[in-house]
Length: 213
Ligand code: Z5A
Image (cartoon, rainbow, N blue to C red; front, side, top):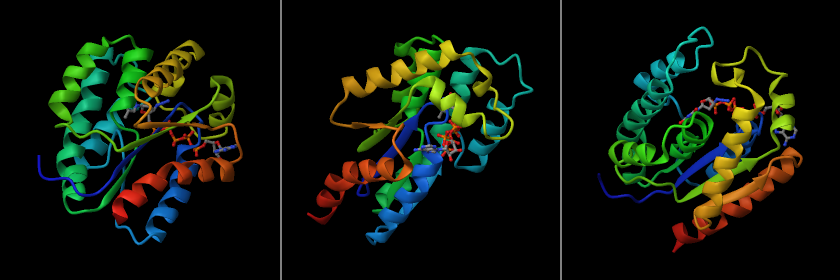
């Protein structure tokens, strides 16, 4: 993969954690520093990836096997890395990605019980060594997140899972954050939106300092 000059930030969290709300404020802050930013999402972010997203999140697709779901997430990711993320970083742009590989460990690994070693193998193959410089994890009790999410439109296929699934997702995310403290910043997503944004902006500060150096 080509040389990397920009910064790569991923945003993670369970259902209703407030990623979309935070993304808008974060984007304004980063662009306000004069940085060229590419914002993208998973699954999706490319024409192929968005087509995969439509399939994998379709609530009418009841019979999707856990293995199929895992491979579809990585198919979307492999395309996003090559078409969007790697070229942007090589050009010196920053990338803000709404979910990345940690979501597969949390949802398909923790949630669905797919072996973490298999996910790690797919990561080596699909991600071409691209690891975020910073991962912001919005952490929220499952019940609170589900109450928030209930106010939205139709649930996607994964959102129809039981609370126990989302408890496993949350624990997997927290375990990954604990295992990689240099990359993750865990943010209490139960705070008001402005406090969540302030915490995220504080977590970004070292990246701006590195960028200026
Ligand atoms: N998935 C996967 O399984 N494996 C993978 O590898 C990947 C993804 C990459 C789509 O993700 C699904 O894909 C997701 C995981 C799976 N399935 N599930 N569940 P997505 O990221 O596109 O969708 P999402 O999880 O629903 O995220 P979202 O759209 O960003 O929603 P959100 O985090 O819940 O954010 P929100 O819409 O900003 O907030 C929800 C509500 O809470 C809304 O009414 C806000 O006004 C309110 N809110 C937000 N912040 C606050 C605070 N701080 N206080 C009070 N209320 C708040």
